[in-house]
Length: 570
Image (cartoon, rainbow, N blue to C red; front, side, top):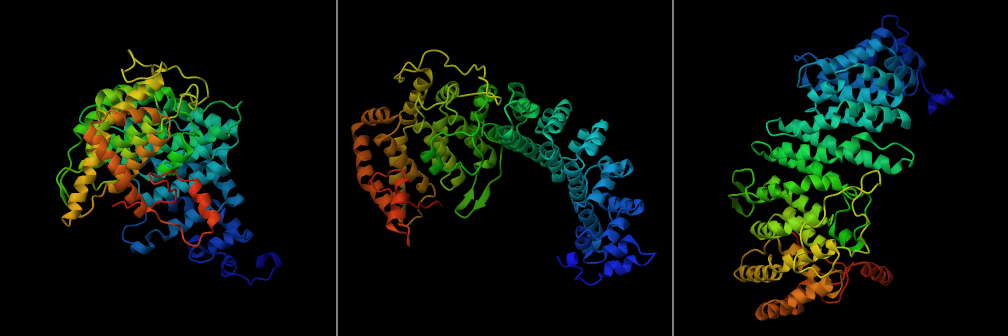
């Protein structure tokens, strides 16, 4: 810092400030005005904090620039004004947060008719967000006095900057008691319910998408902060509402009421998936699923599952009859009936629900033959790896079901850690394939049997593999789902060798028709073994100790080799 030792030369800013008639615009023309502001140039700060300068800065970030200006310079001054107002200099923060007239100028920006200019909206959001963090009490007091504040923010929710503003109110308020006060205020304003109402057929798709993303971010933020809170702290009211059966049921009603639209289905399902998250995104990979079991950062509130269960048949219907989509041209030809984002999200939801191991959910999937339908789609859309991955997760959830000793008890809890009242009990007698008196294990065994008997997983694998071999022998292209099919095949073999349902899978294989059993044994001993050998890649330039350590962490393959495998995913 040269200025600390008076080694810098006088800046041009100081020379301008020597003039009595210098204007704010002249100073903003200087390239180093922001640097000088952050360097606490006292003369500059005193000038900027004058009433007329602060009013002009606020006006710049809230007023549409003249349309006749050159586009590249049209938002130059609004951008610089925003940077100055959010430079985190105490004298500017104090002036902006302490002067109600300036706050009123800022607030007036929200009172415009939509749509807001997205760039100005981002300047507004950044400025208010900075004040929420730095002048918390003053700004919160001001906003709470504005009865229509939340309504105005939601009116402009099509601008992503409004999402950021809501999230700052939830995450940037300190200390904890004041944050709790803000959360109660937002809850009293029915923020969650009003966002949920925006996810509805007939609403603008951009508004639906932003409302969905805001709800997802609220869930994640609230759960993260709940994990960091002391036990004595009060529960988050917004999270309590979001996880309530009434709230989830309201969301589902919006999704399926009236004419179904892909936007409402996809955006609503994204909220459901976030509610069902047991750990943060990025840890969903299959290797994590295999090697780390069912460790959970969060427990799934049973009220969420209670609300979803009656609508499983509606999601099943979406797999059968999705919202209509036009044919699309792909690299492998014209696809007359694309899978669509709605069906992909249903597949994601099924995978997430199976991982909860809820008995009545599993039984409903059996009753509806949901896995049979997903496998149909897996083979029909042989080039959609997004779908293939979700089906693979479904199979993994069924075969890697934790034993009753490994399952948390109760498995489903409210966010406050108290046992949740649930109606997710096994209804009626256990299915005849059940091998234990424990209802949850009995239903899960029925789901495993369903996968091998009704869905004919083994026969499907063999038929698809032979058909692909025939296509390739005729000079055709290897099918795009073969990498995932290889992994599913290995998954079956691994669980036949060791796993919570090892004995049951062994019996189910023995029950196969003799010719099919012979084909499977030949496939495992020869075809799959050779495929694994070809797909095995030894890591180069690694010491033997490192390679051995890596190998010890990998799931076994049918060949007994445990080195890292690289599968081809088209």
